[in-house]
Length: 241
Image (cartoon, rainbow, N blue to C red; front, side):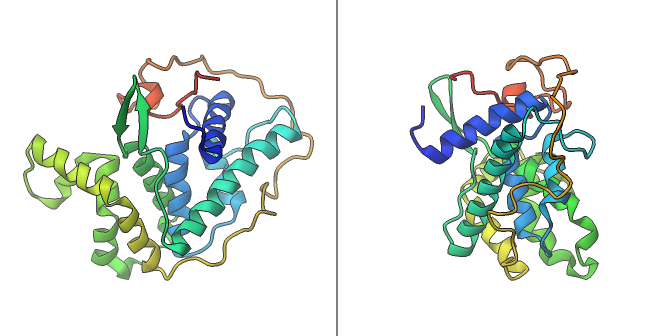
């Protein structure tokens, strides 16, 4: 178990998000999503991207208390600002790509890359169609990490061993890949500061949250249809509380 205070905060956030909605982004997907938002061509206000995290049809959840709302959204904004600082300083590292499972260290960038892809879709209307091939080449490794089916778009045949090696290479090079995408649009200095903790439309006295979805077990198949276990897809829950 980690003693890193930032990782502890992120792990706690992971559990809180899953409690709000089992289909909320997990912290690895969230980190990829926020990275994509920051790397995009134009700044996006928190009120636009924050609801997507909770996967409640574009709505913010009804938090139990203002304190709970501040804790969850405050940690999200902390992650947002730390990602931006890492990109500006050249020290960016993707979070949630390496983790421990059953006593072994696992490297898997799929969830992170799925989150990044979600952020790209959020900004698709702002992308210049004339940017074309250069941008496509920059984001291709992340799209392939999110789903190796994207390899079919290359028109080439890949063996299973080739695919494994490519995924390993792209995962290793993620910091450089993201840096190139960030620099493609010249970086994004106009980001919300710590004061932008809550979206403007956040209710001051939210109603208590009542779970309506059936609880999903960590080893059950994820309800999103990814064919992954729930603990490795949409809702990793820290059982070592």
